[in-house]
Length: 410
Image (cartoon, rainbow, N blue to C red; front, side, top):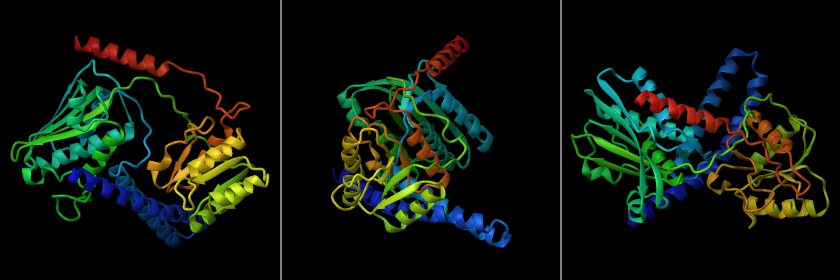
């Protein structure tokens, strides 16, 4: 219980720090784009702006790791063929790891689809594989295994899973130096590392822990010093297909002429967003908090979209603000933003369910794309999104792939 309370307290602290840091990074990453464009014909200054931009990106990566540990990052869960992902990972490891390390896959060809964020899972497995490599300095064997498991309540609690039921198990085992029992209970702590200074941030395993727990899964580790280590991840079985809007990242960055009510309690971020929105052609109505925004709406001021931060001072957060505004204006479009993604869970309300979310820090191009995604989504007279045509193509491809794998296995 003490360990759980400590982890929760550190999680809240890191989440809060990351939120404030992401506000600062939003201004830095956005304004450096403006400066970079202005000095693109001056090579020495262009190099300086590139250095600043790269440093800001590294800062964003650090806050992402902090939020991952704190279980507060934005996830985009979908059905994942874990065997396919692990086969891709194995190819990468074979190409990059020392030849003294043997990589073995033992994949259950009937394994279920998992429901998780593919990018985060890939990062987590790569992180564990790199740790295993570092533990086998003289060579060894890395084994990646998948299988289906069904947990009762007791088994689910034992591995820290969210509930009893069906899970996909992914096991990463190595024959390295192992983990001393004295530090085994600390390995998921943030900033705890046995590596030399400069060899790691100490956030790798804590990020894996946070991702798995936020996904509703569980993780366990077994190790004896000198006899290797085994990390086992349990992810929920996918039950239904999850459709996500696609193609937005590939679209040409365009602006618009609509009016946007921008609600942001951080003055610097509010000024930056206002400048960027106006440069994209939008009319902007800035508001420092939810109370001010509600007063603007009460006056009957017309606007097409509510762009609001979620975590705000003043007693009314962005989700509550959106709920009130959508109740009065059902066809109002909403775009949420925050550097503290734990609070990005969508408002429990008819028209705001599934409203897009923009994670801080963001660039001008990301802002532009998300605005068009929000404004161009078709809605009916009541403000409810009009469903897009359902496609079974992904399911057909997955089925055919598993059939081919079964035939190859036989």
